[in-house]
Length: 264
Image (cartoon, rainbow, N blue to C red; front, top):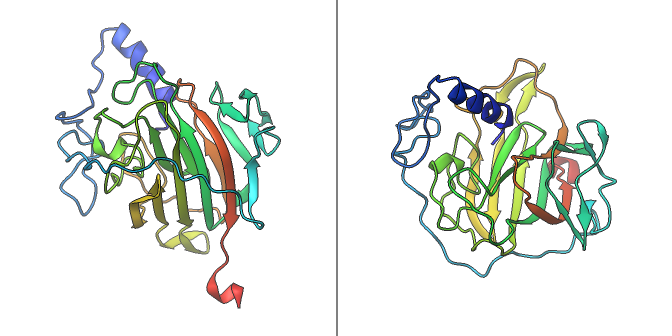
């Protein structure tokens, strides 16, 4: 989740004796209700996604027409907060570190493949210890979280469209194993910069569909209702979040998707 600044602020509030909102299974977070649902944002009473066992990460070589964002050697395709990328690279893997990783290229409709893991032995509880996120257009987060035997609020589970739509199922493998995400994303349709049709995302976790052509109500927010901005961009970068946890990544590629009309 996009909450580093909130996390730091929450710590300060707690230290100063001010109340900080609690979150987690069974907890009412005191947040707005998501339109069209009986649930609040980060609602702890929302049912946990059922667990689906599977064979683990689907490892797919980048197709010929893909833009490879990580080839196992360098982060030349990325920046960190506007400067050369600083996340460490070793043995064909890069690891989350302070700063936001931002792709140099910007994309509209895309197919994204990414593989990740939380190091074994790292303490993980709820949203802490094994947390990151991949942001489409730099705006729409698909949650990355070590969710194997680690309950949290449903719309913050691995594969969730964070703060909006929990995954249909929990397809995460045990900690220390590689996980794969395959994402199909269509940006919102705009007219004069104003959104007239919502963004849509389909997500597969380890080859299992967890979001099926799901409409988003706006760019990702923390503890607030998402809503579309007045002027929405046509393209945006892929972003990876540092949430304080050293998540490993490998085999990252993106394919721009043409419309059927454009492909004729």
